[in-house]
Length: 161
Ligand code: SF4
Image: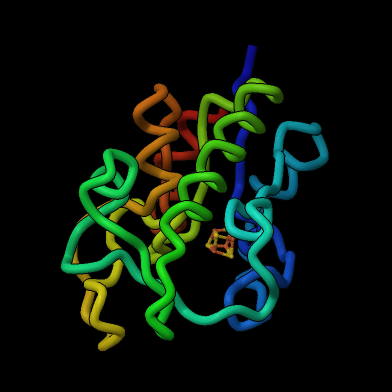
């Protein structure tokens, strides 16, 4: 049986980003998987009750989602508000959704403090990247779900088909 795919809501065209925009990813394979009923779109931050738009947020001090899950680091909005609890809640809701729909794979928006997989930002709101995962990615991977960034689409195609 072919796997199902959890996809970031913003990549599927939902205007759920912190700035109220989407980041629609268009690809023939993705369109086909959607037609086959194998794609579940989900935004962990809005699922945790965060508004649209909302202040930008980053994981502090060059940390990553693993550290946040384990309580060793925090996620802060640019305003200084600690939103770690919301990010962890959103990650658990994403895991619940993936399990409910038998999603063994995920395609998540890179760079996000929730959905990043190859890189995230360093907590200074300066645009500086570093290697690391967002909170949702870290939880999904901890539970055996393989997460791909859009830049890894060929690898995802091989796994899906
Ligand atoms: Fe997109 Fe993920 Fe951010 Fe939601 S939390 S807007 S799905 S990158």
